[in-house]
Length: 87
Image 1 (cartoon, rainbow, N blue to C red):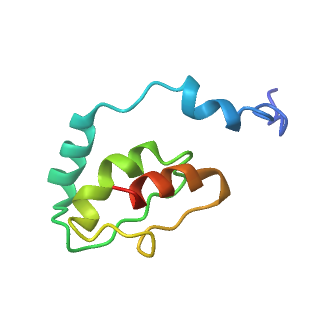
Image 2 (image 1 turned 60 degrees about the vertical axis):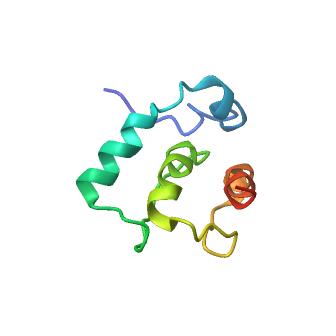
C-alpha cells in the first residue's frame, strides 16, 4: 500500500518557476469570464505556488489599482509580488 513520503518534493520549490510550463494567457480570460472579474472585487489564489496564475489574473482583479499594498503573498512568491507592484 502506498504512503505519503513528506520528502517527495523536498528541494523542488526553487526550480518550480523555471521548470514549469507557463499558463496560457487565454486561461486568465476564461477564469475572468467564468467568475465575472471586472477589476472591482477580490480574489484569493490558494496554493498559488510562485504566483504565475496570480500574475495573469491580477489585471482582472485589481484593474488599474495595482499596488503592493493590495497584493500579498508568502516568502517564495515575493518575486511575483515585486513584478506586479512594478507594473
